[in-house]
Amino acid sequence: MQELPQVFRVRQLFEGSAIEDVGQKVKEELLSLNLNSKIQPGQTVAITAGSRGISNIALIVKSICEHVRSLEAIPIIIPAMGSHGGATADGQRNIVEKYGITEDYTGAEIRSSLKTVTVDKTKQGIPVFFDKNAFEADHVIICNRVKAHTTFVGEIESGLHKMMLIGLGKNEGAQYYHKAIQVFSFGEIIDDVADIVLEKCNIVAGLAIVENGYDETSIIEGVQPSDFRNREKELLIQSKSFMPRLPFDKTGLLIIDELGKDISGSGIDTNIIGRKFYSHQASEKDDVSCHRIFVRGLTKETNGNACGIGLAEFTNQRTVDEIDFHTTNINVVTAGHPAAGMIPLVFQTDREAIDAAMKSMPLGAANNVELMQISNTLHLSELYLSQTYLPWMEGRADLEILSEPDEMEFDTEGNLLPVKR
Image (cartoon, rainbow, N blue to C red; front, side):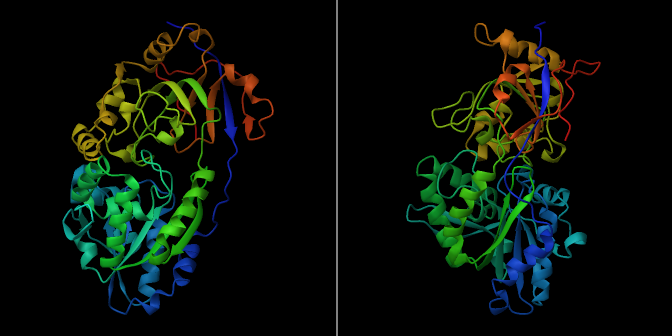
């Protein structure tokens, strides 16, 4: 087998402070919106809960419920996601409950259904779908994290608008919109659908979340429906400045310990790995270039959904054995990105996979490979770099060396030890 480079452990320093009392901040922001002038005692308020692994999401949703109850209204939690959870009501309820959003914890009923109503059509003739339970509520609060989308680029990407479009559009809406986006522009579809939802679906408020590079809650902001577009544009810029990143923009082999829907909508965040436009190489629009990618596991929270595994060239047998192909296939087909579910080359052990990846390197690269090992594309504060990067560390105040170069560590079965978090 190929001789492997020695690696050393590095800590990255990212921008963005963390909110100390998340629950109190939620209540303060909602209080600033004067919802008591719109929400009357006894009315129902639907609150969205998505499929992403948002930090403190259970506490955030619980705090929204508590504020709604302080107005003597009735909070209802709506699992708001497209094709996730196998595109079933029980599967989507299970996802939010695994994030800690349970009826016992929040004190609110969870109403999970894939039933939608068609509230109108856009000027392109596209039907606007909306979760039936949310539509029948007196009011809706849109709660979501604002961040860069993994496929589309625009002033609005992933956040409040996407929750109204895909989350509350459910599987039916997600299928239709992803097809429409292949004909019309993402910005055009998201603007037109959001305008109709805001006009006809009783949206009373938004709660926008921005996280820092350590996956901590950095910003929580209550947003009036009339301000959704302007504030989301501004918060997206802030979110992108906080986004974690690889320490260097070029690597020969990127080893990813785990992928999952809780990590990113695409399983592996394409903004991090530089494959936002092409599945297996960087484009001129990407800031990062990874020549080869080896994915060596799925998160427990992804429940077998391996969306994103098709972005890698190499994987191992144990990862393939964990895949729920039914769930994965539904997700990638609905998203209009079937390549994201395609299986890479499969090897019995990590050592064999890394050896194959090294052999596939360009002439001369295998002996001086630039290698990185990360936990996943959400948690990048600590990682391993090959000794090739040592000369590049000079002058980097945002990087701290935690260990001397040493051999890569494998267990007795030839599987690489994960990055500790």
